[in-house]
Image (cartoon, rainbow, N blue to C red; front, side, top):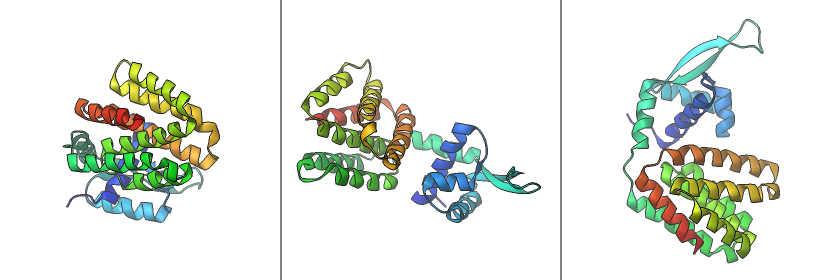
Length: 225
């Protein structure tokens, strides 16, 4: 039985946390990262465990002497699935729909506040299941902020993107430069959320195929028009 989209999101987040720490992950840490209750996270992990993608173990709970806590790690089956996802076939229809949605938002910025446009994109992101579409939404988010900064800043940052040694570096430099420019204008909660999204963007873009990077780079170029 294949993983549902929701279970896949929980599995990928668990794998991200495990990669960062190289330690088993407690379900409360996963719950915090996913923005759900600890019981929701635990129930979801039990279902994923039944499918063989994670395994549980027990470790001493330092907060409660003499008690152990349940922690989870990805299995080889999960890493095989993740590897397969990295080589996923590009769904051009889905990609074109994503590009159309984001470019439509950018064209309507004059009729929509930056706050509302940002909310639309942030609400869409949890439903995205492919790496290239996730990266496109992050780039679209920063193009929106850039367009609100004015023509001079937009022109300078566009030039940075164009002069980068390769497409991946150009896109990461673009996102990093815009983030550094706007971070002081965000409230604390939004700033933390966007920094977390950028961290995921940097991880995912490195794993894209050359074809996907070309598509994403072309998208960024068209977003400047």
